[in-house]
Figure: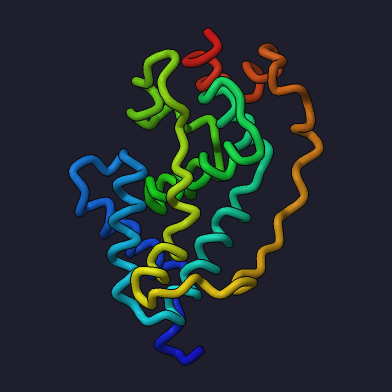
Length: 184
């Protein structure tokens, strides 16, 4: 890779923010992800590969039990894949939201899209985020993103959060604001 092929986290966040500004509803994760694909596909192939590393680094950095518990409360359950898709949704909400929520998942209650979510609504997820780079690479080069282009190290999950997420009392104690919205 040359220096022109590098994309760092700041550049990826700028691309996400540009995509958010260019869609009618920036809370629509799929629309933001689709626009991000279009924007990223104009970049050199090496830069797209680098963006995939950054994107999956953000997925890994947000692999935390408190956030998983929050996704579980909001979505009425959350599988391994569902947690990946939830974190994809979180990324396309932008850097400020991502960083605030990863630091304190209970602040998800502050987001209008969460606080006004009707009971039984579709899960808060965006699987499309996970494929931004691969779709952009295919659009730019006509080829598949190189296999094993990304290396990720997931952190160990916090054992203090190793309780049954169906334990309403424990969820209410740990995520009081989300519990008030969804477990009331």
